[in-house]
Image (cartoon, helix red, strand yellow):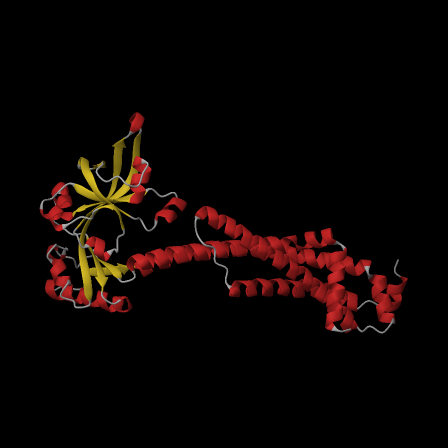
Length: 405
């Protein structure tokens, strides 16, 4: 029997009992669709976050103190270190940053509705917005005069206004900030775009940034230290070397080693990818159980089919059909069952991914490689779980098969 004839015969057999075939494929459909949906959404989510982070800081890195037994008082970062860092010809811009985490925004709005939101209060110089490639939506950015005069002004991200005031444009409004130093008021002079807004919404994170002049922050928190520097490199391709040379310059000036460390976007991407990999691995494991159960279902139904078609097999063998012909026909039938199930699973999985992505406001991604893997897995299940029923059919004695009622 030719393969084409065996294939046509197998397809007719599958569609002869549609409901039974569908129930047989159900495990395959569930397994494939769950993996496809998670993969397409996860890949879209991954591309979205990596794209935003790369846009925001493809040439940026942060320099911190590596607090250990080698750190001395004079090694702590100061405003003057900015000029030292700029001695590195590979550096484009540097911003001094003093950060305070753990405060909250407190504003009494209509009907005395007090809204609270966790925040990071950043004291920065005017170069901060250049380093971070900030997108100004309303108002203006901080300038040198704000810093020199220690003005109580602030630039906030657009998510703060939406959550606390109900609108993004809050230029001219006062924002009240509660910290361990008491309640402070800042007048908003500018609103910038939060590039991670949609991902914060997804994870229900309400962590906002209030950016003030660094000297204002110093006067309020009674300090003159710099917590870290945010630095942009002239060439994104040489960012690792730029960071290494920056550390060398500071070590030479401060005459101490192993006290400075750098971080860049790749660290956050790696952490996110590890989390996504863990979730994908777990779902794949669960899906593999569904596929295994589906494979068992295929084998059982094929055994039932062999029993139902025993006389047909006997007739074919008596007319000269070889064991190989019977084996191939039933094996093809099993593979077709799992391939159709895989195809339906891909369609359902991608459809579910598109629906989920719509609510998550991301673009699902389904690669050709993933499609090939899905069909390869489906056909493999058909072959693995179809071999036993096909062999049983091929081994039937034609005389006994013809006597079967």
